[in-house]
Image (cartoon, rainbow over all chains, first blue to last red):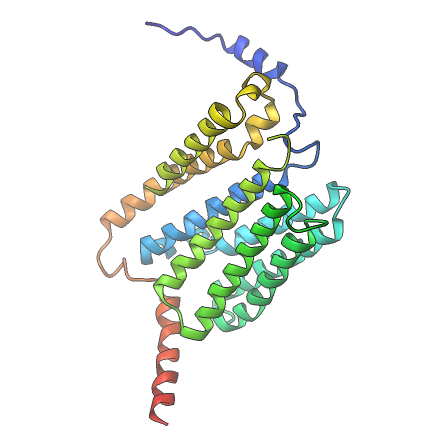
Length: 201
Length: 91
């Protein structure tokens, strides 16, 4: 059996699709791309732990986490420029991501200790959780599924801060490293869930 | 298997969305939904992860046990903490 698909027809069908659907209500679709990004980077952090020393043979792999944070900061700056509402909240998140990327980069380059990097990362995750959770919901925390999803993202950020605090308290263990990497994946998943309930769906 | 698992989760999510929860919307698909749909992005993430992990899996398969040791930073951080606990225990 032969399946005949004309590329011209296919392109024509795609071009006839409405360019602006109702999935984000016309807003800049930041949540899904940030969600996919964090899910991807979190997965690679799990792979990093599984691969052991092989992972750090290549420079870009070693600098993946700080690079991802800096990229997310750049994306958040674009969001705060493009989006008309919640500019200060997005800008706060962009600054936290920017400084987080810088300190993680300094740590990975061996210029500062893990404790110094965590001294910024832990408060940043707690503040970031408040910004993206209770502050971003703009109203009653339990008023809608969307508000609850925003709160979920904030709670995941606090869970990541808790993992970092446990790392400081009990020392680095492989279980805590896996927990942090899985937590970053969960952060991505929570942002994707947020997108799922953002519009008409 | 993380990449295929993510792709499978994305497929299940998409099937649930279009087959169970929002059946009526299948006829009103938009380009934005195709690009920004969470299930679609999860499938794309899994696909990209699978592709990126192929050379890493080959490198791990060819590596010696010493190369597979945990990253240095975990070991290096652990030593001072261990020394600190020993010193505290000795007091």
